Length: 204
Image (tube, rainbow, N blue to C red; front, side, top):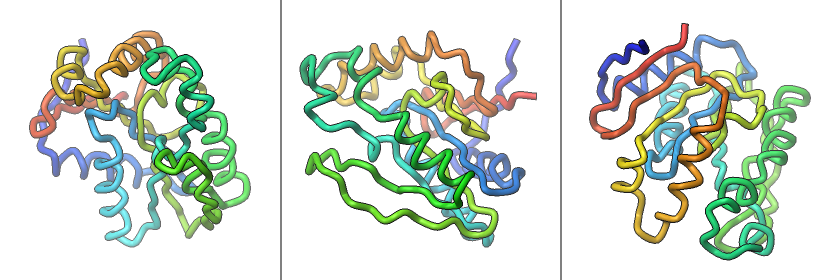
């Protein structure tokens, strides 16, 4: 039976910092979670803490690897299966961030701007000594991405429906279905029903 230990938001940040800082760079890890769990906010806090201790750290958001509107909305603006399979370019994320950082010491912060629906024309970033890059966003696990370490912010379907904005409620089924079928086990699993009362389980 999995055992979770309760913690605080600050305790969660420090636990994630310890997991990332236990590995020598370059490190390309993940904080996986539905938008309702705000994985990018946690990633920002973890990266800031790492930088505060002198270790280079940056965050790449899955939403900045979104596909053009013509692709992701081919079957409509609120198609759940499209959100799961077409909305985000996980292959490009692998190529431009995960593989690029490990093989050439550079990564591309953003590929596509959802608001303007065009490339932001970002310049690749060069890794610092012992660089950490945290990829943050939904449905990362279960796609064969070579991300390590991995932290999963898990929420029940009821919690997702309670906290997801009404305009985005159509995405919940995709997130739930993906979590049900993904076979990757995170290094750290966080019960995130209530952001102020998380609980952590670390894989041994």
